[in-house]
Length: 286
Image 1 (cartoon, rainbow, N blue to C red):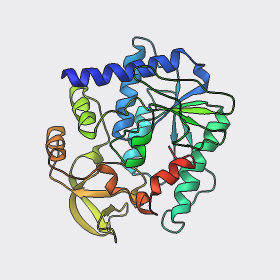
Image 2: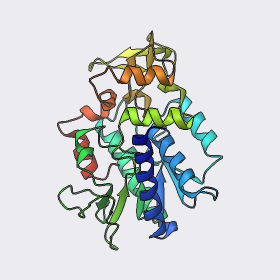
Image 3: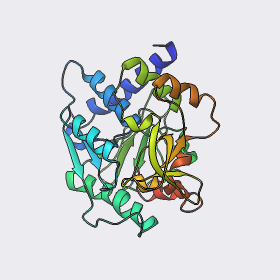
């Protein structure tokens, strides 16, 4: 492992341990999206407490519209951790319900789950390089009583000193991977031999082209066949693929070194409105 990756790992482990050792473990949860960042975060939690088991619970907010490969991978990982799977009973449809689908099935479901299980501190795998509104996040980010985010009302933070203060009317979101980049994630996955969903690697798949120019995968073997891979994973009707020949981690890393676009460019939900992601985060989206 390079010295730079070692430093990123060291800082992330320090954040995990500090938060867990200074708060009630029953009030802490780790969000698990099944993606590559969640896989790295899970690996870091294993390292942080080795040789003991992870002392906190994980949670997946399930919309019912993930790729079948994601569900298979989640079920495999669920055997290793204490995983809560929560789904909003509203059961909206991404094809017919538009932006309301993301709000109800993701944002509102997330807030419902936090309240149901009385979690006050939630870890996530978000990174600042993913999207411009995420660059405003602290490593330890404060949310109000309704789990809303105000980027102008945050605790001061001077790494490696993280302000974990919160009241009965606030909660915390914690992002140990804040300073990592997409290439850092893949370099770490390679070095630590971390298993990820096969969708991240190029293979021939049935896709359709949407108005944004993205290739959207289909789950019923319709559309045209293209060799594609996914840089980020979510609900399959809302997740774009990129044309790619990268079938291995080394090929993925090499491909990323020659791209000028962030991975979030393939997420359809980021194009709902101007400043779409920031508005979602202000309302409670992770």
